[in-house]
Length: 313
Image (cartoon, one colour):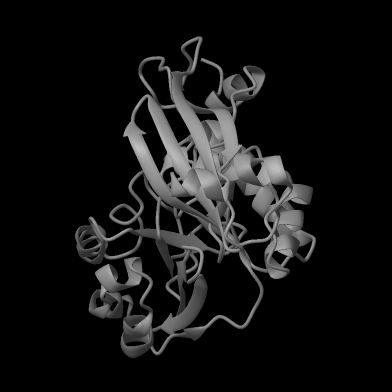
């Protein structure tokens, strides 16, 4: 069977509205090999991994492992591990960093508060501080999860690292294997599919300046998939590239049809119609899938700016 990323590219499957959903990302450095479910099938203590998974349920926090680009034969556990937490909701975007000797300290975090945008437990439990470096680019490279992530993601991470791009990490899982290489840029939480080195560099440079690169963008993780598509559609329609100025403020309807309000920080408001359709013809949604699937796609059918008179009615 052809690789899932090859088939998706050949079908020109749209990437908009396909990003993983998380209001907050919690990232723990874990060198060495990763298994399919990395939190419990890596060299991280699986008891800790299961506890973090349970603690994150329903909080909006997505926990993932990261490692530096390069060879992944187990080099031994480092004395200090890097930890990041990033909140991606506009109006309260932040990226904090810490180092830990004992990763069990992550169990002292209030994940519900982190998911809601409150970083105080990150500081109290881990002595975390605002990240003073540049934005981060997380490249999915977990070949045990899907071979496309290794075959396409690892060379991308290596190329970026070798060319001196700062802030590049490999990450365990971003979803959407068929869009490999997939990349998440923090702190703003925009994900990219079929990423190439120049796109990632542009996205990092943009994030440094508080801008969003729409090219190849899957969406912002702060929103559910229909909202991701709606926000990107507004950006494209009005040429808005500033990060943090657009928010999904209302969603009416349910699959397969939504009416979504996207608000600008300057007071403007748009009503965006999003329709869910099945991706045809059937294709492998991942290289490990036993059967072909018809993945949902988010099609934006209308973008309408609401005038003050319409808002009052």
